[in-house]
Each structure stands twice: as structure tokens, then as C-alpha cells.
Image 1 (spheres, helix red, strand yellow):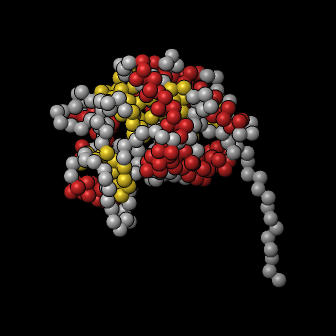
Image 2 (tube, rainbow, N blue to C red):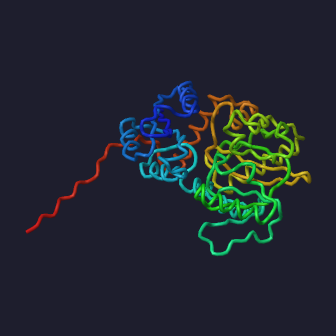
Image 3 (cartoon, rainbow, N blue to C red):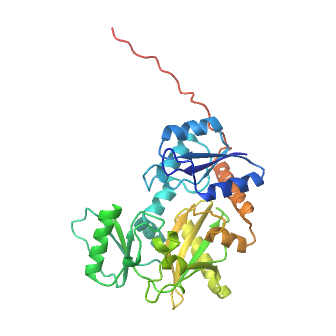
Length: 346
């Protein structure tokens, strides 16, 4: 196939892109595909003209934002839907659900899947209350990902700390605040690949044992991005060492959560296992990060799927899904809109 890898640029003149773009492109080429890379920032015309020139059979979508809009992935895939060209991963509905964590939890509740009890503090609410939530509470932005707005102060132990943290998110992140009961326990990530017959990979555990004494066991922004921080050095992802029956439960909950939130092609579910063996869903990440040393690819490798096979399987799943909707993959066509006769004046 002719596959275009779609990626975000930090600004209009940026020539760099995430390392995962080159990894995915190389894997697709190894699979025998003709691959091009289209990097855009926030220009719809550039997106349209780039696809029109390439006329791909499939778009491998790695866009997480659009321009300066951290929530722009919804608009990008909505635009791709209008073009009727197949693309990998989530669509507008899936991404909207993923980004509204409160709505996602309500859908999990409908499917009887455990999650931390929560409340949403909207910036324009007249009266805000955490109701019967039990301290300590974890406070984070409702719609942001990549641990934006999350640090050591996100775990609060009093009403005063709660209100201060909510106000900070409103003012600094410009988002509603999601307040949820903190679930003590081990943290796992389970990758899921497939649609009708999805498979869950062996669980990956986040090891917090290297954190300073008293530090909350959460993967905050420093732990994810600041390589010089104690949080980054003190956390690591490892293949989980758990009993087979525990691994089976984690994988089943991940599969159930992906079905409940309509995750397409591939995704990752973040879970907590309590000391009493209850499994809670923390987040569901549709179209999760595909860097070849990250948790999803590492879990796939543990399942016997190497990186090139994983990437090419995601492409195959997207094409199969499109065909099931009643259409063969078709390249982007030139603009053939009808030209209407202009109405003149008398």
C-alpha cells in the first residue's frame, strides 16, 4: 500500500518530529509498503494539499495535537473522515471519550468496570463539592494527557489543598479538574491489539521503588519527561511478575475497558491492583504511544510480536476495519466539486 505517516510539528518551520515517526516508517517499509511522511502544525490547507499530492491508501495517524490545540486530534480525524480515506486508530468519537475522562468513567460504570470514585470541578460551576469522596484525593486536568498538570502536589489530603489544586488547574491549564479517590496499590499497563478479536498483551508494571521516601507513587510530568529528576530516575517499567490468574484478570479488565470505550486497532489501559486484589481502571489510552522501547511495544514483544510486525498489524487492522464498513481503501482524490453558475445582477 501507499501509506502516509501523519505527524505533528511543534511550529510551522519545525523540521523535526517525534522519533516514533521514523520507527513506524521504517517498520512499514520493512513490510513492503511505499511510505511517505507528512508533518503539519496547524494548517488545514497543508494537510489537505499534502494528502492530495500523496493520494495514500492508508494514513498511519500519529497526530496528537493540531497547532497549539492540545485537544486537536478530534478535529484531525474528523477531517480524515470527510476525506473517506482509511486511517489507523481512534476516530472523533473515540478521541472525545478519551479526552473527557469524566464521560469515560460513566461509560465504564455502565459496563460494570471498576474505576476510582470521582467528581468534576468545572471552571464555571457556581458550587463545587467533592461530595462523599474520601481523602486522599488525586487532582488532574479533565481532558489533558501526557501528565500535563500532574506533579507531587496533585495528591491532596485536605479540603484546602483540594480547592487550591483545583484553582491551579483552572488558572494554569485552563481545563476542568478531575478529582478522584487515590487508589493505593500496584500500577499496571496492559496493551490491547485488535478489534473484533482483540488480544491483550502481558501486563507491564510501573516500578516506583526508586522514588524518594514519602513521594506519591504516581507517574507525574517529571517522571515522564525530566530525565534529570529524581522522579524519572526512580521509576521504571518492567514486565510484571504476577501470578497467572492475576495477569489474566488484568488482561480481561483491559479488554473490557477497550470495548466499553470503543478503542479501535490498538490502545493501552492503565490499571491499579489494590492489596485486596481489586482491579481499577485509571485511564484508557486509544492510539497509545508507539515508541519501540515504550510500554506498548515492550508488551507486544513479550507476546512474541516484534516491532515491525506490530506496526504492520496495526495498519492491517485499520484496512480490515474500513472494509467491514463497506468500502475498499481509496486514495485521496483531486477536488472535483461542481462549479455552480454564478447568478448575475440585472
